[in-house]
Length: 490
Ligand SMILES: Nc1ncnc2c1ncn2[C@@H]1O[C@H](COP(=O)(O)OP(=O)(O)OP(=O)(O)O)[C@@H](O)[C@H]1O
Image 1 (tube, rainbow, N blue to C red):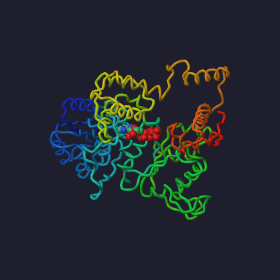
Image 2 (image 1 turned 90 degrees about the horizontal axis):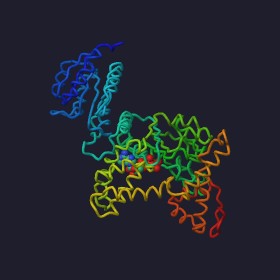
Image 3 (image 1 turned 120 degrees about the horizontal axis):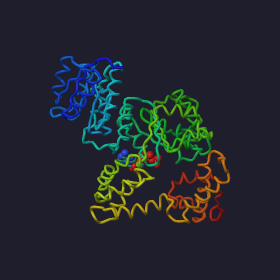
Image 4 (image 1 turned 60 degrees about the vertical axis):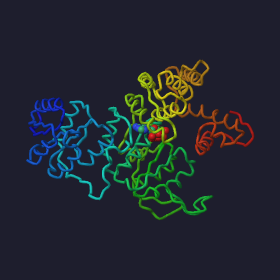
């Protein structure tokens, strides 16, 4: 079935793109006109032509994004699809802010473009939402980019983020550790409508469980032992802005219940307080854990999950967007002078080596590698050998992967697990294996570190590379007896 005939205006200074688009859309039965200049497009718009515009950003006479507000003002009925090879988060955000129906990064897939055209033509036009005159001007194009990466996977993220900027919707960001969840939460705030308000982050895994409620909601004087003064909570600090709830999967159940109530009623009370306080806070949550699994284990409230998961964003692991490695590496090296370190370059073979590496620690691991290369090596251009040596070191330390020898920790764990699975013959072990196995590893690790530091938790935390609060939390969760100066049995 063919679509209803529509009049489509195309502006792009690349003749090949004009031809391809014109052919594809004419084949669908539309009337298509194309031009290589912004002035040509503007003339048609002023003359009242077209139901839909497809425009490039960089054109010889004017930038398509700059023309967008004018088009939307003159012809609110006209839907505009923006295409651009400047495929960054800022382009997506600007296109969305200035009223584009959609934004397509170049090179685009023709089928996707056709689908977007169909959607645009069948969606009733919304009134334009011009930015108020006094609003902060959109960021200049040479502003540092909040997120680096031009891969298709990141383009999808940018498009979702751009659509969210004008909203207060609750967002749930998932992704492995180091994929940039906090950075995305900040970008949502910095370019969203609450950008003039505060951005407050709280990491559930870093706060002792019994203090989480008072950290979040504040407490009254005398609410519990040690509450000698009234204290404000993060909700209050984030009033008018964004509250980033990091590692939400680590939130204790009682605090979950309280959070659910705020999301349902828009109000909360402090710990020990009775007067309801209105919450004017946009919530962005993040986790690297599988919340559905936690729900099955009874550790996470399903109703809270649905309240938080209004817009889910899954950040891809770096190995799923390996083409972003060169841009990211360049970006991190360019930052090094701020840390007093020299800028380095990677030669081609070094870059190729980095693109073959699986990056278990994701972007954070790449950032740390760049920092090490910058600090430890004299040569300005880094070759494959150096990268190879550094990667070998970091994967030994970080992942202890299976080829590290027969007596490696992962080898021992693997042998144990194979035997464990074998013991169940055709059946499966009881559910909740992940946490059970981690506990098995964590308990002796923490116990041994405490022993080695004679129960000194500050030193043990340092040895483990953990935050002190996290260590305290682990000790409690794993029921590890701690007696200063006395060695306990692992
Ligand atoms: N797309 C990106 N562009 C530039 N820098 C990035 C990007 N993604 C991540 N980073 C950098 O990598 C590091 C880790 O990012 P971030 O802390 O946001 O990850 P995370 O997913 O929140 O990690 P965790 O789950 O461990 O808290 C930060 O220094 C961040 O600036």
